[in-house]
Image (cartoon, rainbow, N blue to C red; front, top):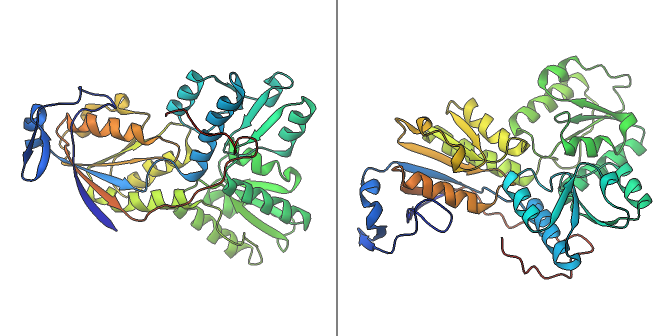
Length: 356
């Protein structure tokens, strides 16, 4: 774990007050004199790292932007490309058109499939309509789909651990719907009835609570000793890393702010984890959602962001916090993420000339 202290320049291109040109050096740190008084009465921000975009989200957003560069507008996107309000609005402003179903896309048009993955029937529908498909499914979700088809091909019943209605769960269930049973909680794991318990497997949604998922798996293994899991855990590296970081900053914070949208599974899990550790936590789309009363009496604010939240939202939040006295930023780094995924077919050759 690495902790770094960062001098903050309150106000920036990300929002808040205009950037200050009246800078001076105090105790080796560059300080905006306009905000010096605020800095002197400052609290601390513990900034979690890793945070923000994972490789799958970056790949999916890049895919839409490169499709727009290649084909012009409109480019259609099935569902939200990733679960973040700001990302969706930004891509809409560039010409992306978001639809609920592929059947809403005009015949022969370009459609990008979201990072959460889809059932095989979606590909069938797209083919029937002559759509040019750019598949931005996260490779780690594709891995789970492959496992589901493999288990089903061997005649095994699949217990899918996940949240009903989530697009990733719908896509994974769709790989073998007649053989998939959804379990959402430890309570359901204790009560579920299986007709053929000796021919049973489990898979998980990639963005779940690591601790709760482990508990569910433990219950299933106790009840069904012959249950078979995937060769490697399905919960993705980014989900694990962000939860591990919250486990470090939450106990040291008076309140934790998680930047992410309400429909983001991994972002919700970060806020829930902090609360389970005893530190109040709030999930917000951006700084405008923060109630200043949440910070009353706080000396330390923990800050992180879900895997679908762009980093510029973090910079905006830091500027907002600095203006309210939280100008001392300590970045707590647990690990460095170097994972990168190749772009989907159809846009790999297109340079990205669009600034985010």
